[in-house]
Structures are given as C-alpha cells and as structure tokens.
Image (cartoon, rainbow, N blue to C red; front, side, top):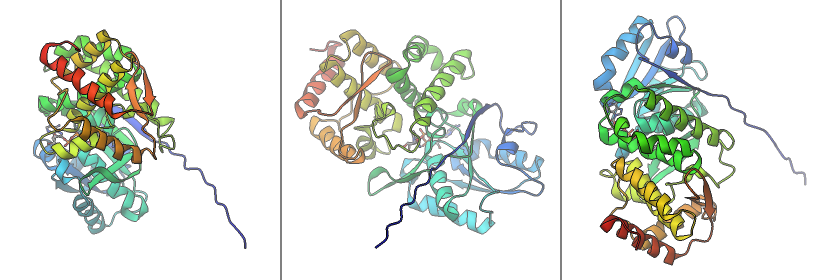
Length: 375
Ligand SMILES: NC(=O)c1ccc[n+]([C@@H]2O[C@H](COP(=O)([O-])OP(=O)(O)OC[C@H]3O[C@@H](n4cnc5c(N)ncnc54)[C@H](O)[C@@H]3O)[C@@H](O)[C@H]2O)c1
C-alpha cells in the first residue's frame, strides 16, 4: 500500500503600524490597510461601547471615503467571548456578501472584540482577511499585534481558537483617552510582563514612571517609549514562534494559573488583573527557587501594586493553582513549561514544580501583603 507525505510551509507577512486619529478624513492609513476601492463595501465590527464613543466619527470617515460600511456593533466583554458572537459576525459577512480575498473585515475594539472577529474571519470562507484597530491598552500591546484568535468554551478560557493574524493592525493611542483607568492598569500588566521576562529597561521605565503613566497624558513621550518597547518585545517573541510549534514561551509568564482564575473570577476580574496575580505567584516561586533576590521580588510585587493591580485573589489557594497548572500542562502538551523570572528582565522555565512550592509561595505572598516582609 502506498503512503503519501505532504509537506507545506505557511509563510505569513502582516503589518502593525502606528497612526493617530485613524478616523480623521485626511488619514489614509485605514484606506490603505483595508484596500478601499471605488464603491467598496466593508463589514465593520465594533465593540458597542466603542461605537457609542466613536461611531459617529467613524461613520463620517467611511462616508468621506465613499465606502459602503455595514457597521455591526456587538457587546464585547469577556462573557460575550462566545460562539454566539462569532456567528453574529459571520451572518453579517454573509448578508453583506463580501468577497473572499478583497473585502477585509474591519475590527474596532478591545482584546475581546479583536479575538472574536479574528476567529470569525478565519472561519468565514476558510479565511477572509481582516484589519484590527485596537482601542484598549491590552489590545495595543498584546491582543491585536499577535496571531491568536479565540473564544471561551465550556468555562475554559480561549478553548476554541486559531492562529490567524490580521493583515494589518493600526495602533492609534488616541482611543485610550476614553478608556477607564482600571483598563489602563489592566494593560500595564501585559507591559510589566514583557519588562519582567525580557526587557529590564522597560521594567524600569514603568517602575519609575508609574505616576506619569497613570496620569492623564496618554500621548506623552514616556508612553511612546513604553508602548514602543512593549510592542517590539512582544513581536520579537512572536515572530520567531508565531504558530507556537515551540510551547516553551516566555510571554506565557503570568498565563499559567491565570486562565482558570480569570474564568472563575469573570466578570469582576479582568484579564490583566488575573495575569498580575499569576505573575505575583510565579515571582514568589522564583524567589523560593533563588531565581529572584528579596530586593527583586520586592520590586516586582511593588510595580504591580503601584499599577493598582492585585497580587492575590480569594480563589487562589495552592490547591486551586495546582488544578490550574494541571490544565495548563495539558495545553503545553504534558509539560509544565512554567516561565518564572530569573532576575528582572530574564526568565527560565520550571518543569518540576511541586505542590509544597505553591504552599511556600502562598506564605511568601501573605507575609508581603501583611507587613511587607517575606517571612
Ligand atoms: N489574542 C491574544 O493574543 C490576546 C492577548 C492578550 C489578551 N487577549 C484577550 O483580550 C481580552 C482582554 O482585552 P481587553 O482588556 O481589551 O478587554 P475588553 O475587550 O473587554 O475591553 C475592555 C473594556 O473597555 C471597553 N472599551 C474598549 N475600548 C474603549 C475605549 N477606547 N474607551 C472606553 N471604553 C473602551 C470595552 O467595551 C470593555 O468594556 C481577553 O479576552 C484576553 O484573553 C488576547
């Protein structure tokens, strides 16, 4: 009997580009990214809250460009990260009759919205191009720059999804002006993550500039530098392992225990907050393994606290985190691959974590929260 072996390589090129006032009629960035032609029609999927804030300006922009835009405003918070939302979008694509290659879907919103639209675009006709315009800090530095799409399923975080990058992502920080400060703090968790595991200079920028970062000037040079380093660091990690053939990923720092915690805690616990709690526990584990000094652990926990992020959560017990690790180990194909900081700005992987180490991490965090000690 004969055997056929097929081998193919999936190469991809996509662009992440900064712009300002993307819906200003004289800004050409979106027209170029979404390939506007005369009489173009475009499906625009926008977070309903973002639509309330920017919908009029956005519609004016499409009118000024002569684009027939069908705007689909959907609720896009974590509980809406579901198959229902995906089917709402593919129904919209179907009713507009968009072409398979030349009518990119435009996604405008936070990480939830861009994750959902990405999956819908990937499923529709087995792949329709899309363009992302993130409107949150999490979106700008993380969710909208990579290749992953997802919805939650069966109370599991991001259980259904794909690798399907947008052809083009436009980063426009002016959207952050209306973002509630809790969501700025939330996005800082992902920035701190990049600093802690691979960019000590970014870590220090955030640490020293925290008051300014949480102030009102979201277009300051400090923010320029922070976003530039965070996006560059993220893309540097993603580009060499975009399809995640390699499951040891330093950018998974903060993403080992947090998926389960986030699902247990939704809707009150935000993504970045769950990531922050995970980073605090993982850093305590690093201290217990002599990978962080007491001073480094103090700085790590200090920067999270200064950002207004939680260090612990009532759902976090050694047992619940052990269960979370068990599920994540399956996600990592039977390996813990648990990233912990090794000094600030570097990371190593743990493959043999024991339950008693979680007990010790719990004691370390409790002592720190009680009186700032580690005893
Ligand atoms: N695909 C990836 O690689 C990746 C990476 C990181 C996070 N994520 C996902 O991203 C999601 C979290 O994203 P998020 O933090 O952006 O949350 P989100 O999408 O829920 O948005 C946060 C809130 O801000 C509102 N909002 C959005 N833009 C606004 C603006 N400019 N002004 C005022 N309000 C605005 C939204 O309506 C929402 O209420 C999680 O589901 C997470 O799993 C995905």
